Length: 355
Image (cartoon, rainbow, N blue to C red; front, side):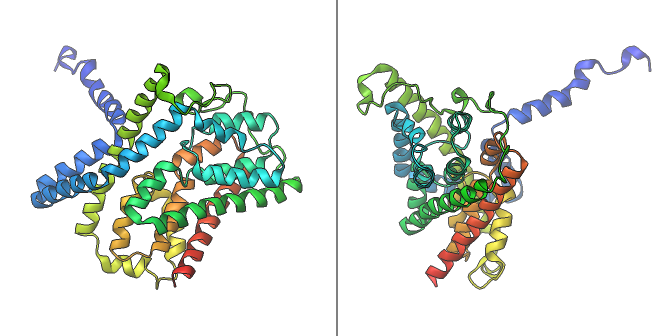
């Protein structure tokens, strides 16, 4: 063999280019396609059943999906999402309560609050209400409320909302006590360059235009509404489709007896296991809704499902990275402690209330 017969450089680069292409693939769509392709090869009947189950579930939840998309887009178009920047004003005790309440009701994504939070912290706003907001915000928002109520019922949704506020209050007031002892001095990273810009995450600055409820009277706001509705529908639609696909597989292959044994009401380790598993197993707040519904149908306790959703929401990668971008290790560790303890206590109280 001569040197001229060796493979050329483009042939050597093919695996590198392939890996780069795979990394750019959309996770729920690409993984969902691979799952269906595998099912079609191994068990064709189940592939057809999973497709039908996913389509039926999407059609069933479509009215609620459209409502949540319109609500999120309307908040952006009117500028009403700017209200959240005002909840940190006032005395610390009042600010913590308002931050917890608005955190559970705000429409921001986990990283979308970071430009506002970074600016407030840089301006000297206390850590306690900010951390309360960071805990409560990923757990619940208007879209999550509507979709959770549609899949898991109004009782579960209200309990989850109350838990979000309660976890925010516990975090804020405990942090306030700790900070008064001086233990949280120099707990923040430099925030001159926030890691998540407002243009990337969709969080508005406080200097934007005034709130206009009749947004359809202005062409730029109409365009913003359409853009936000499209992004929200694409985001929710593909994640929910992926989640319904996983739910169909759980129903087909996951033994209900095992769920009832390990995560049922009678299991002592159910709630701690839900806290521990909530971190690595949590895909997405919206994707978790039908997954938890499927697990509850298989025998899991609603209290355990609540614990899993709470722990996973606060410690999911977007939420954790958002806090890590602002907090030094000791404050970040405190954030994780509040996430774990708050979700466990919320699940415990819900379990006692159901019994």
